[in-house]
Structures are given as C-alpha cells and as structure tokens.
Image 1 (tube, helix red, strand yellow):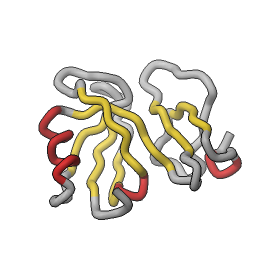
Image 2 (tube, rainbow, N blue to C red):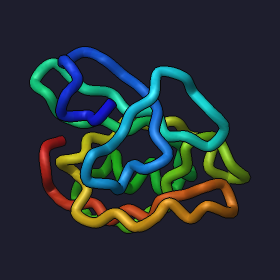
Image 3 (tube, rainbow, N blue to C red):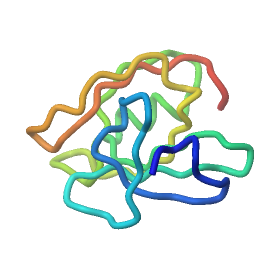
Image 4 (cartoon, rainbow, N blue to C red):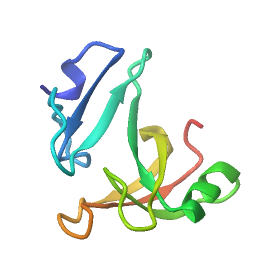
Length: 110
C-alpha cells in the first residue's frame, strides 16, 4: 500500500525507498528497507551504516554523504533510524553490493 494511505504508527518494508509512492509491504524480504510511519506521519528508515558514518550522523554538525544498507553488509554493521526530513538527497538503491542507498544529509528535523 502507498505510504500516504497508511495510518500513523505502522511500519512495513519496501524495495523502492526513493519512489514517489513509497510502496510498503507487510513482510520483510531479502534486501528490502524497513520504513516506519511515526505518530505525526513522518517517514523513518531503519538501516545499517559503518561506524564512521554513524559518528558523522551523531555529531549533527556536518552534512555527510553516506552509504545506507537495508541489512548489515561488510563494515556497515551499525543499525540506525534516520528520518526522511534529514535526507537532502537520496540515490539508488544500487541493486547490487548490498542494495545500498547513497544519502546526503542536511539539517532537516533531527
């Protein structure tokens, strides 16, 4: 079901985190992204990053470009929750090498 038609306080899984409709499915499949619809309707992605990228996100004083995976992949073993409002640019997913997204963060809502 498209994200905007879902009630708040739900989660699902998608293969298309960068699509306009953000279709969500109830079952997790290999290399799909977990997405939460928070109480106020915000989008939150759950995924994995490297320790270095996690530290850059936690500092909140710069605007890193990072690689974001739907499951742990090689050095990307730190699980994080990242609100869509914080993402300035999203490219991908790659469909290979862990199905990663390339994200550039901005100020957005923290």
